[in-house]
Amino acid sequence: MLNEKVAVVTGASRGAGKAIATRFMSEGAKLAIIGSSEQIHETGKELEENGAEVLSLQADVSDEQQVEQAMKQTIEKYGKIDILVNNAGIGFFKTVEETTVEEWDKVFAVNTKGVFLTTRAVLPYMKKEKAGTIVTISSDVGRRAIANGSAYTATKYAVQGFIGSVAQEVKEYGIRMGTVNPGAIDTYFGGSKQGETHKEDWLKVDDIAEAVCYMASAGKHMVVDEIMLHPLSQEYPRA
Image (cartoon, one colour):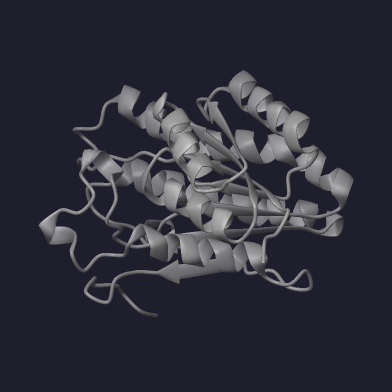
């Protein structure tokens, strides 16, 4: 389904990003995986041992030069970029009075500036090919507000606006953009551990990978603007 496509996945060292890369591998895609720590190379080795063609890149998505270099290395290896998955993200949950300026700046740097930098970096290559798909992992809180999460929620609202605007700019080049907006996921988010007992009924990382794969592999004549998914057990307000 994604045979010979070149996919860049950020935040791919573990959790949902690793699951997305693994799913893409099974669909025949060539991979460039980006992570902020040396663990990204361990993940790349594991994927390679399972048959993937993969380029592992340690980079901070909030750093312009590192992002630009990562995309250039991907082009040098593969000659094109067909898919970008903006998965890298961080979060914390405190009252606004407890939130420091440093925490606010950090979450915006990764969750919002990071999406801006990676998206901007791949667009020249996608425009050249007159095709491309950019999938951004946002959150259900990008569509509704929650208490004690003002910084994280604000970044996800910002991402929705950014993607919506850029989608209109690049449509004429055959580039599609969309967001996957999950509810509670059993992953490492917020410093927690994957597989904890209280997360038994939460979304699994493979659920996110399936949604991303569907969006990335949709026919060229269509665009999937948004996928919202959450656990059946999660309370969620309906319109």
